[in-house]
Image (cartoon, rainbow, N blue to C red; front, side, top):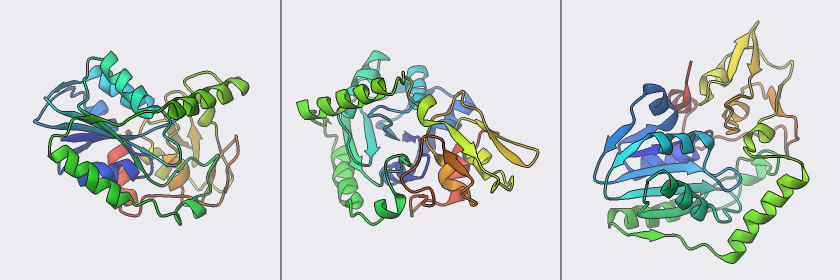
Length: 258
């Protein structure tokens, strides 16, 4: 079995390719179930600022995994820095000893920095990476992806950039500054697809609450009217993304909290 967190479908797609028994972390958190047992248990999630999302960390902290083989796959778009090291350290801090951790390069859906129209044209050889990871997990390979000093320097640079912006962790409060334009028609898709239940429809208009926001951008990417935007700016305000293998209804089913 494995568990995933996914705003635009990347990690959901990978999780479902790795195991026929995949569960959405937002739905598991809502269910209250916290004890899991299997021969192999995995986690697939994106990295934000080179770290696992806050909800994923909370899930790992609260859950008990009865297995001899726990793996973590971290999906990313451009630079993973020392994400493997950060994930390993956090997992171990809550009593989990990962047997295998790897990164997997995919489309980067971080709107402040990347143009989705350009991102989808880049060949990132996802299936090739996936096949390697699948074989290693199935063979019981015990391997933590190597972290270099250059990787660590990448994360240090990121932290310095946040400091220069006078932004303190958790950084989701900065990345999750949304605004809803008059293009909103109150369809409710954003409310249904938010994994943290941070969006409500009031008087036929989406209203975003920052508390608990994971800054996954599921709402922004899924709005059919392109009515939700970032106050901190976007590389291309007109371009949005969802993994080509995952439907809108699948993401809503995985994330819906209300």
